[in-house]
Image 1 (cartoon, rainbow, N blue to C red):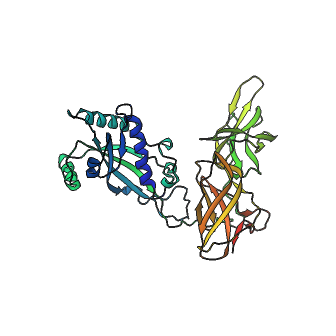
Image 2 (cartoon, helix red, strand yellow):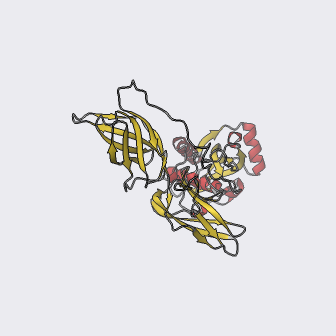
Image 3 (tube, rainbow, N blue to C red):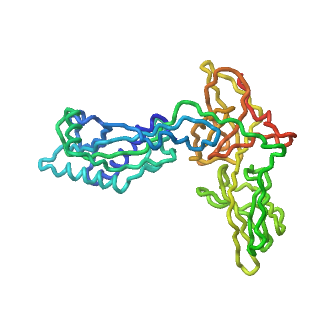
Length: 399
């Protein structure tokens, strides 16, 4: 997601794309975002003007829940903005009018080849926010304006008409400033809190993986993978993440129907959604791989708990939370203070195990803490209590 500076960030990213494409054709070219009359009056060198003349909203995104929202949680949908640009060349010395056409042709070719803004296109400027982290990339498409529409635009600009092309940039998602609500989880359902159980198919002769326990695990947990014929070779449990690759785990016990594995200290391991599989290697060099099952690696808050924090005179609370395993840059990180998600303060480096958060509160109180990374929460249940209950130490005391 992104904040209200995303409109400026997208415009700045388009400046980068266009300048990179036009500099070999027109040296010393400037890419501006002025009104047409200002662009025509003030340009000492060749300029390509990217004028944002209109902003609309996209109806299909208006009622979409924010990314990472779970059933039972509430959050104001992001504001989906469509940016409408007019691209106009302003050459300085062009008696035959050909330089303007060369500039416009090069700009159109650049946006045709670079129709989607990636993270490398955005300027590393904290003032421009974090538009590069929004889940939907911004796509640039030509807008076919009729002669009548173009005439009306230039009449409204009160400027002499110049050959121009129109483009749309969609979707720019602006985060709502209203805080979301994430209620604490249900501790158990029913008298025993038991869910459905599945049994393997006894007819299948191949190694079969049917379950993994726990389905949401911390690095301190031992994984128990159940199935059939899991001793048909030397088993190695593998975790796979779409961005961070595969991580082999240390096998601690093997039987026909069960394999146990422990997390190590692999530097690729991060909190978030993973998939787990068992690779069975035989003495003859062949391998068999079971099907994959989903596994969520939960972050653990390793700070001394409960945390203590003091409000400032403006009601701001600043917290530093240590976690394990470390999180990676680009992951969606939130600290749930009670039922309120608080975004992480941007950090330097590729990985971090100490995270900073700040939020406003109206008064003192005690709030349960959960760390959410890519939709996976740190555990809050006191497993040693009967019946299960929320761990009272997983909290921050605000004074």
